[in-house]
Length: 180
Image (cartoon, rainbow, N blue to C red; front, side):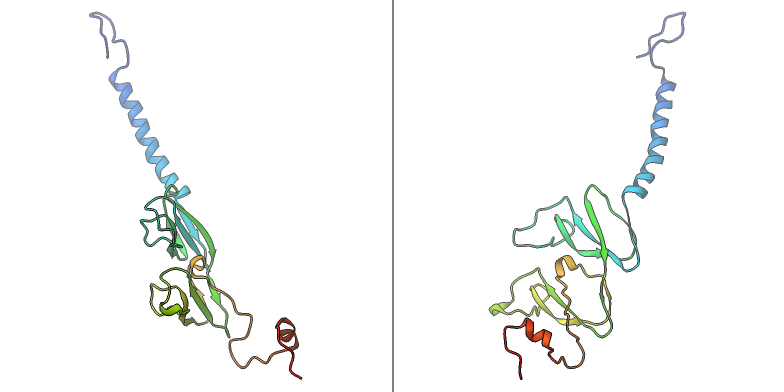
């Protein structure tokens, strides 16, 4: 509170000083917020890569779930961020930039879905989107932004085109005998 003697200058904090301090705080926040947003919230995903997102806050997932059913739940998210510049709040999100899945020419990709319900009758083929198992569609040669953390991509060492004739090294690795 400003006290004033009848004949002297005012004592204490005067109103203009409060305005100066408040104005300084407003200008400082107008400079600091864009710097924080650009520096800490920016995700740069280069060509040929993707960002796998993990939500750190939100609803808990069930114990039998491997990934978050929606963006409102904690855990690894099914959706990934493609190439480009993205912004996420580092308090609620963490991310890891990983290479995209690339299927070379002359090969095909097989997807194994690790999340969802078990197929009926003990099957291994995931015919529906909500089932886990081997996905019947193949991936042709290209680059795919598929979350391999949850999709379980595997690489097959054998050729995918033409006949595979067994060699001596294949027989040495197998439990059977080599045909004569």
